[in-house]
Length: 293
Image (cartoon, rainbow, N blue to C red):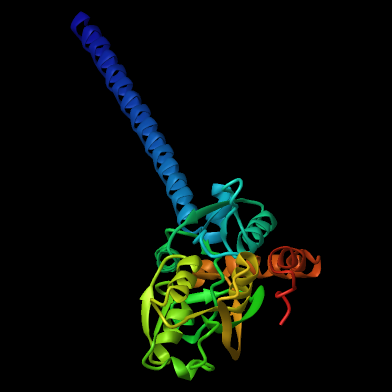
């Protein structure tokens, strides 16, 4: 009888022990499942954040950074140059670009580079945009998406005042010109059969004409007139004017990533024109309004 009671007690204790172990394992399993679920949820949230970041377009990234990087030469008066007294970067394009940045709600950060380097930097993403009197051409439209034009001009041929042999672009055939590498004016010189020497600044192009190193330079009418008026030289003249209008716009890297940025810049240009700000900046630097076609 005692043995039976003892056996019954041992059986009861053993059953309780087994039941206790089972409850402990179940709890641990539930806790592990909950932890795994929480970890998976956290990983999913992190992935969602990463995906959201990667899905941001160029405009969103610019606004997140709080600034827009703008390529410009800083040596092409009166579009982009340094004030002789303060050495501050100034000019028509500089002020227009800064006004556009303000409309976008970000800071304008200018990066001074050679003309062709600026264009390359835009296409590779080194710069967000370029403001440097970049005119719209069919060739450039294959590489860049342009904004609406914000100014208009004409290309001209500048020669020595005593040179009577050049009166048209066609007369440049077989002669020499000087221009910035990658500029439309360099391309025009080559198109008309000239041998082009590449220089970095507007002043250098004019100096090479003045000292007879080259026969002419092709440049913007506004820049040529500004140089002649500012320096007071009577040794240079505008020998020919291209009848086709040059449209200045902002080049952006081609692709849908820039669709909203282009629309925002177009809206800014439209507002600046309606407010009279574009005209005001133009008159400040050119003494005339070149912002209306």
